[in-house]
Length: 162
Picture (cartoon, rainbow, N blue to C red):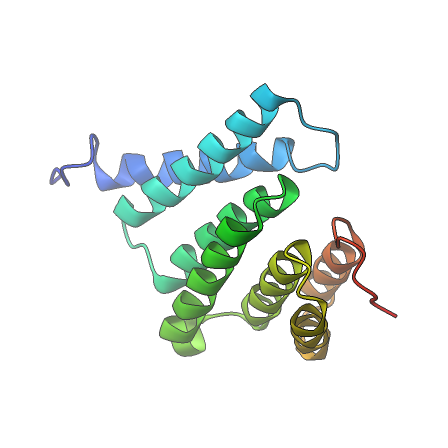
């Protein structure tokens, strides 16, 4: 097994990426986050992105999902500019992934961008991105249900979604 210069084997990085990603969701359940929780959330999201970058067989899809998670962490903390930056990085990775990206990856990119723009008070742009997210056709029933549930959850920063 080769060493990748990142402090572990690329197989270890894959497992650590999955663990960090899953643990970030423990803090994204809608609860009010303390300052310590906020730091912990960001550290988990960035750890996931760090390890995905170094993991065995990592793809642009993994990069897109890591950027989406980092964007979500920032948006729930009210860090609009950073949320938008990572949402846009998600979009670049989804585009680079081409047909390897799932239909829901496209939807989540638009959702992340919509939330970030809404957090910045850029409601016209946010509404356009929200509409683009809603317009993505997601073929799998379970994936569509997860996506629609996410779209219905806060924060939306007062964006009119009707």
